[in-house]
Image (tube, rainbow, N blue to C red; front, side):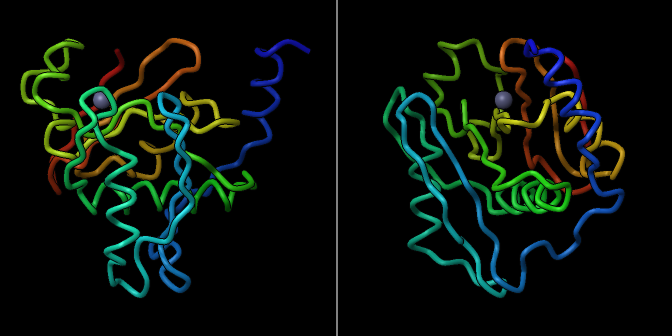
Length: 182
Ligand SMILES: [Zn+2]
């Protein structure tokens, strides 16, 4: 079976919930599984319990989501992390075991952003954006689903081709939505 056939079968068997798990993971806490391909770092961590941020865990998340090139960390928007936790919870409901975000890019310094040709006012520079894919989940399926369940409210999200496909997500502002395909 080639990869395309595999993805087709995957997509057909992947039934994402029609409603968002509103308070995803609030009982046990909000958590994230993150991998940084550039550095090989991995993190599985609860960053919030009963609405309270675990500062030590949060700092680790911010560290992993740093600008790897410049080796500089910054504050990552908690709303962005909560959106990711919601995606994770939905994928668990859909039967994806242990959904993991492959973090291609998150916080960027102004200089790195310029070097890679990022948008002039990129939300990456504010710690409000992530470029990612979830292994085992076709990004186009995820992207379409996020719009269907109105996951996109108050976010910017962009779908990009390439192998593997990946998407951009940012927590720009509640009430503002921008969607694009790049
Ligand atoms: Zn991006």
